[in-house]
Image (cartoon, rainbow, N blue to C red; front, side, top):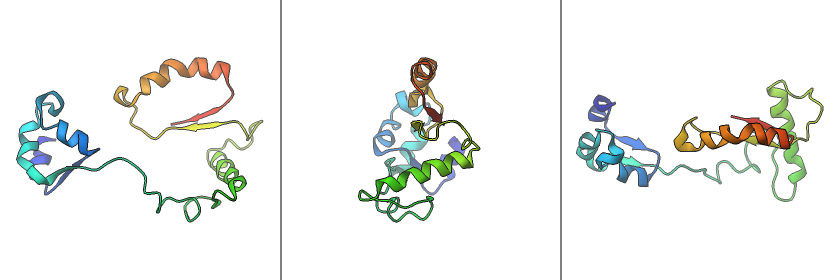
Length: 130
């Protein structure tokens, strides 16, 4: 990674806060020297969603567009996703569905999910997607 940082024109990381933190040894993991040398060419880009681009009212990548006036249309997206995963033939299409898009790392809280998932599934009926 060090060589990649040295020869990169620009380097980005997951947030402006983390970009500031990795300038110091505790977070820099031995890379703080090359990170500091990048100066303004090392930046953090905040994780998040552009709600204009990913507005379900206009999103052409979902099965059914909807807005606050047509929330009942939203369920078609869930049913289509279940069909895509081969789960549409299950008993109850209306079970709650929980999804996570993340690295499977303790830093992101996956350990909390792993420690609770079995008891959650015993006590509740839902689908969980990673």
